[in-house]
Amino acid sequence: MDDIHIGLMFVALVLLIGCSAFFSGSETGLMTLNRYRLRHRAKAGDKIALRVNRLLERPDRLIGVILLGNNFVNILASSLATIIAIHFLGEAGIAVSTIAMTLVVLVFGEVAPKTLAALHPERIAYPASAVLASLLKIFYPLVWITNAVVNGLLRLFRVTIQTSTQHTLSAEELRTVVLEAGVMIPKRHQTMLLSILELEEITVEDIMIPRNEVAGLDLDADWETIVAQLTQSPYSRLVVYRDTVDQVIGFLQLRKVLNAMAQKPDFNLTDLEGQIREAYFIPEGTSLTRQLMNFQQLRRRFGLVVDEYGDVQGLVTLEDILEEIVGEFTTDPAAVGNRNLTPRGDGGYVINGRTSIRSLNRMLGWTLPTDGPRTLNGLIMEQLESIPEPGVRLALEGHPTEIVEVAGNRVKTAVIWPNPKPIAEKTER
Image (cartoon, one colour):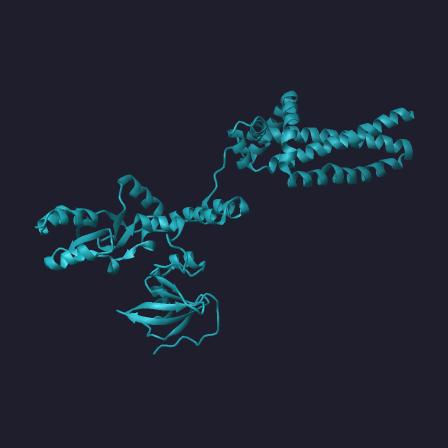
């Protein structure tokens, strides 16, 4: 065998190793592509993305043509290497070529191209798709036969090969995608998206105004009291009931009522009852996602939460749900007008006991537990297992807390510090 033939064989060997690297890298690149970015580009009309998407629709055929080509060039390269080694080393060349080709194929034909493709999948997969699509057309009969045999073997193990579908992501997986988006999604938008994903897990009881704090108008009260409440109420709507809130009649839109009172000097109780609109009731346990849709479909802005016995538990407004998504309309703890939370000079916050735990976590970035009591008062009561007196201290999930005011068998206000600091053990007087 002359030197010219050996030289050509050596050149062919190098080309075959390059082909092995191409098949190995293209396999890794195609399989590690961001499928959502790929579908976005395909929907935008990108021809290369459309071609890649078509290849990935049948991964069995794609892998079939890649492995067919990869195994062919690797075996051919090993054969050429053996011939060259025998020419120079005799029979010892068989062992030498086996060891050498194992290392060469492993490094240059497998590890290096696959690592590069894993780091830059689009740069490898998009150009490679043109070659693979052509090879798939040329060798389709051989690929089809190979896949038929493989699929037949897999069916023996009750594994069915089907055309790939667009897999959906669970809420937890979507949450991970949003969190890993980094600078691609502003922090504020990340928070809103995560809040939307959590709406299905939150029920109306978690955000409702409890019944003892529902502002209502008792029609059994004397007319002077009713008029005073109508003219002095800070709310735009009032629940109307007789005797107790469980006997709800409906609700009033104060703007319309006050306009009617201004236009009619002898406005009386009968006229007021004519302004009452039908109440809207929400079953407890309704998720915020469902309730948001209900508000939209029924063109409502608030409703009363009732239990299985029909007793009113609280009130939920559209604004309450929207605040779960966008945060408090005044989210700065130092902002004027935040009636539930007031900062102190020592870094602590004076907080209203009726403030919901979810609101505290959202406003201050804390992680107080939300799977138990829904308000700060409830959380303190649960931990102390009694009604505390002013001055009692405790730690809530590491946050030093001091009771400031107690009224009506509940904690009215408390001071909480964001950072742990030494405090006395909780005591009760």
